Length: 385
Image 1 (tube, rainbow, N blue to C red):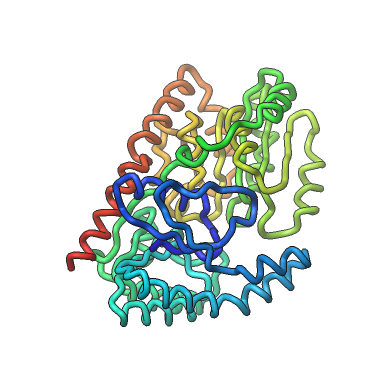
Image 2 (cartoon, rainbow, N blue to C red):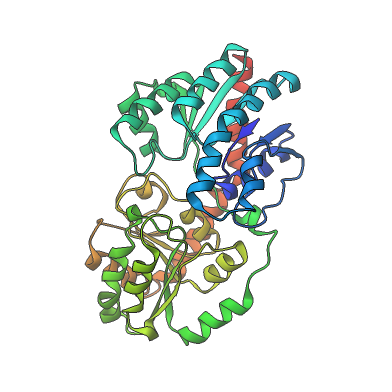
């Protein structure tokens, strides 16, 4: 059983489930309905939408965020009872948690599941929450120590868990975040949107920031780099698209509105897959001016589209971007370094080499076939232990 109560990583979940099913694994996916549109059920996977059913019904009656969060908080402990009972009925022996929703509650459930003979795997997308409090470290350490195996997406995450949580190295495996092509293949591309961006670009290079916008992603640094990039590359269009997940959306839109209209395309909202595919199709370089990060699914996503990535040297990002091969790694918080790296992408014959290397990395390092094989090997080793 693979568990993601909130579908925090719906794209990642689909790709992993699809790849595991193709290995012949029998899987139940315990989750909820995706809040932002349609995600298909992976073929060969039983999907059990056992989380937040009542809250989903009530959400049709109210759009109030605080009310909906309150209802979900009330319902979650009851939903966890299903997670305790169903594995016993279905004789499930291994449960793989994708996310922890409530560290204290989830820890108790993991202990109970282990007590009835289940083996537990946890994927650490991040070692600790992005906006964490010091008390969160202790809570997550208990989980890392309790589960049977941890999958980290980068060596950085593995090292952080080992350093802070006293978890033995042999209990953690590093398996990277794959690209999204297995899911994206089910969707068309919003060609009308792509054409509008191309018309605005008028043949100029498009430098993009894509995906959820949160303080740690450093969008401010990219905005500060606009004029510096323009000095080096006058023929450029900046693209900023994604939802403002933390912070004041109106304030962000106001700041972007102060930028020169002709040089910016801004689209501050959650991006359906068809729209993300459209933006990828017109993007020449993806920037990740993050202040902190353990990994980024957008890196592998960009590589699959042949888009080089410029990232900052924070967390696990350096592991995903080969400096000078699939993109460039720059100092965090430095608009000048970001601007210079963007310009370097287009010097001489750099760009076609970077693009080719990016596609190769997606096909080899971030292949879901390889990721599923490594994940299945962990399942098998726990089953035999």
